[in-house]
Image (cartoon, rainbow, N blue to C red; front, side, top):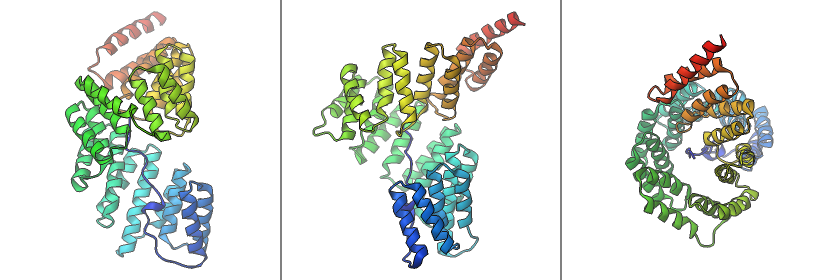
Length: 391
């Protein structure tokens, strides 16, 4: 599964608060507390009240913008961030402008408007003040580049980040994944090792390294990684999830299912993906599809693999229209590993539905993206023949 860098702290944690008094500052403090508690509707109310009292405080608009982002209201978020931007050369104004430009970039990023996101992340990086924000902004910018398929540019951005901040574990993880996508497995392995050295308690990194070792044919090292995880003593609830996941990778499916169901009940929604995988391997497509959907609907990390697998399960059940919707939803995630398979499966599902004109158009799109794949030439020949027969 793809492991993106993870959602950055987008709100109060990045603001340097100024001492203040009065109702506006009181409402602002209450808004920050509500934001940290993830009570975003209440936070929005408090920030709005602070702005009613003092409509000239950029910090209030910035935190209001982050709250709108958390609520998925991206257009309103951009309006709030834009209200914070003032063309002055004062130090505090320039700092707030950088925060606001970063916020606008995040709002566009969350909407999948990557060109606009890149523009604002780049503008934020041009400001030399608040260099402590740069790693976070570079991570967003690199991920935006990935989503647009600009993988070499993403690698270059991670290179710059890690040259500036050599102990940034998330940067090594992200570059390791990008190198994996590009087939540079030795570099990927080195970066996973660097990230693990910095954060050895982050067991997600071990699974990233596991996948790289698989490509390098280093089976014994893979098994040793799994042994490290399954031998964790006094596991926390999160550790229990990683143990069950390691059992899945070890092929101990019955044992893994027991552990995965237990951690899923404790709120670890990512477990549903691996439950789905086990049922999928057992050709129980109904159960597999149900648990992939649980994963997609849950609160855990998301990637296109679940959409692809769910689409396959729906096709196996001849629920083709539903499969098409799921496949298209997965394509919107711009996943560099699953995007190719999702695009090919769109061709397949149109064929299954007997919509050969649409299948042909999808196949042409696939060929334009992946001309090296010999499978698509045969598909195009077959589909052209069916279209002629139906004419």
